Length: 430
Image 1 (cartoon, rainbow, N blue to C red):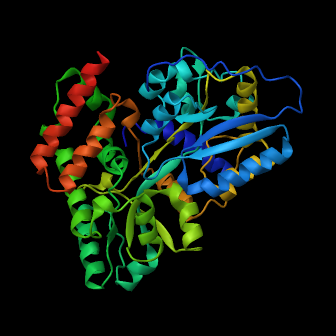
Image 2 (spheres, rainbow, N blue to C red):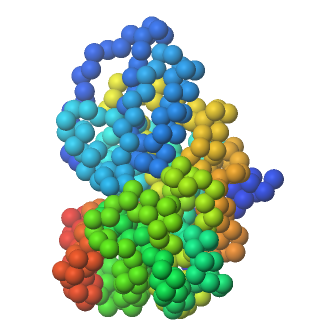
Image 3 (cartoon, rainbow, N blue to C red):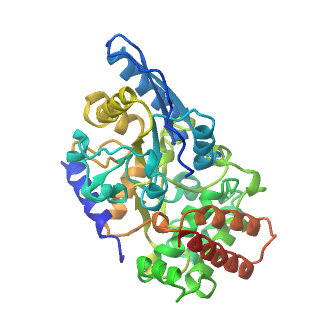
């Protein structure tokens, strides 16, 4: 696929291992902390992964035991929560976190006043260089990659077998036929949790960008006005896929949230779910050893539909505006997480992360990570493109798609709303 070389380079290195914002606010004028090593330092960390909330707490407890002068307070967000809005509210309330996350590119520039320079940190030499690009500006690095992730449709192999589906669907026509076959067998084909706008406006709509002949050139043409979304066939095709999930999905998708959706799938009440390998820990807790795998998100019957999206979803950053003592401890914690044996064990065995670091072996990550790598080996990957969108447009995409799901917009109106949102976000950048 065009435009996928950087991620392929990253994943190739992984395979070799596994086979062997808001307006700036004034600085907090917190009281100066003593240099006494016995003095407790509290680190406030925003964990964006609800799927590993328990495991992250456990890892923090291990770190605290090894570093008795540090207390870690974790605020887990994500799932049904709007991470960016929640972060802005937290900062506005004077409760800025010491470690939080950023998606890079335009979002990193938006939050630059809060991003500490991490270029001199030991972990940098172990990170895959391509994974650092979204957080690199003026030859400085401002974020540590969480992991690599792949997403598509996760499917229940046992339910597919029960319905008599012998050939896995790789095209939109085949997916529709499989959904009909599942429904005839008394099985709900899709768990559709569209309560959160990001699942629609970020992950699903990204397919419309990723399937362009040249995604970066297409985004540039949207910015210079030479192309329009409502004239683009790939966007129309993506809406056809959304229609299939609605026709063969659970009732009330707009009130079905992230946790409800994963529960429906893990309990065997639906055969497919649009998610990524990040839900492996949740599924393991709800239904250990569940027989699952990945399918692509096909928007047509072309061969290029048989691909998963693979990307670095987020980066750990240190709050530039916190105290020097906290910044020092925050950096130590991030380094420990990807260099110590305990930290690396949590990253792989507990979080089931596909590591973005050469010094962490990718082994025993679960079937979803394994199949993500399998798709890569076959050369079947797509890039995520939302990092290059104008700030704010992703949220508006998702809200418009929710109106479509609720039958308040028809397909043509939705496509025009996409274009309006892009034009408005683009003008705010000028």
